[in-house]
Length: 102
Image 1 (tube, rainbow, N blue to C red):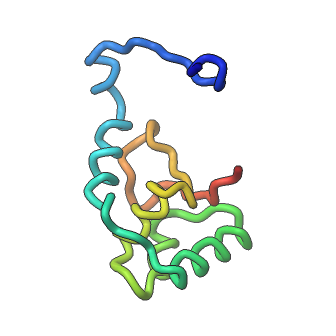
Image 2: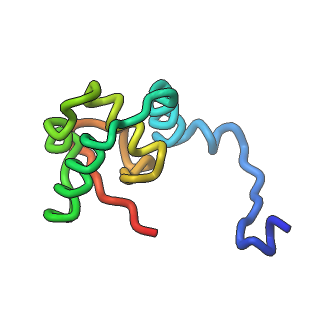
């Protein structure tokens, strides 16, 4: 059923899982798993991303007025409203943020 749904399974060694930045970034984001970004903050950020295409994390933070900026940002990543590259480096002020499509 998983294969028919278009998903695939691949075994990975612990060295592969710990290599790179994905696991570290996931841990950072999951700290905010219980947060929910209010509608106003979400609309402000998504409208800005729609207008300019992409922004850095630092440029996104002023959009958050109703919630702590990092908590709101992490919530939007976790709820797949926006996307960041998790494998290139640790999430930081210069990390590129895009509106998620699809």
